Image 1 (cartoon, rainbow, N blue to C red):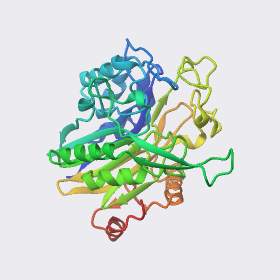
Image 2: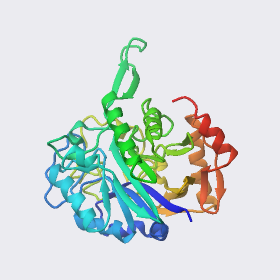
Image 3: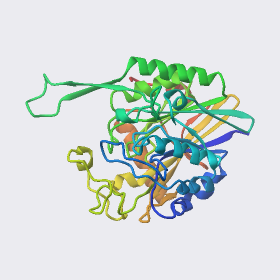
Image 4: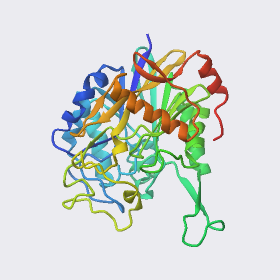
Length: 388
């Protein structure tokens, strides 16, 4: 019997009664063999702001009860906001998760701790998880003597000679060689300990679905080449496309899942305790969807998903997702193959095609699937993944 893993993206749990935001998806999440979510903000009662951008609030540790009540098994922490409330924010988030039976990964009081895999057992399989932040800021990175998250450093080069003065330059990005080598070593070491290995990457450009930065596909492919069975991306606050590379599923961005903001934590609110910086161009790319209170994102960001993967002793059986849409109460609602589910599925297919990712989709009883072991399509994509 295959083991079912489900993944959700960024979880921002500052609002009162955060558990209520999971109500429409609770049965599905709790019914999986392992549910994995990305805890975006630090949970602490003793934080001190360390951020230089839009600092994440110090969320009460008790709000992590919402995850335990849904049966989450693992929480990834390597993101750009986990160090925003300093070392206490990191430590208290880790402790709060462990106290609730949820295994944290991707953050620690040292970089060695942050790079250590989470390992759980389900259905006779050892499941491993690694979590890395590829988007900065530098202050978030753990070191040998500082708390933070496991980093993947990405270099950016701006080509000006072909641009007119004042026009946007061409941007070239690539993972730092040392970071890539450390990532590869971590994956190879974890691969030897587990039956199924998932690598979660906080990566990409905010609010942009129709373009992948140059470093994104090579980084995801590197993870698979090193031994990852599943690659999960998040951070962009919008869905990204999916692909199959060497017979392994890659979700380039599964969006946020629960964005439970308040008037004080919404950076676009006049009452915000998180002041918007003077230079925040990413917040000018879109028109905020005012239909959802304190939802500082565009309408397209209401499309989201639960990534769904089945695995057995021979590897990945299939990979797909459950279409979801964030309602006017900021709850992600799960959909089947009705009109609402097909609308989100059509959106995922479109954004996958727009960036030229190799993936084909088929509806099953579990929802849209883009990888099925043993099918001709899977074998074709596995051997012809297209350019990186």
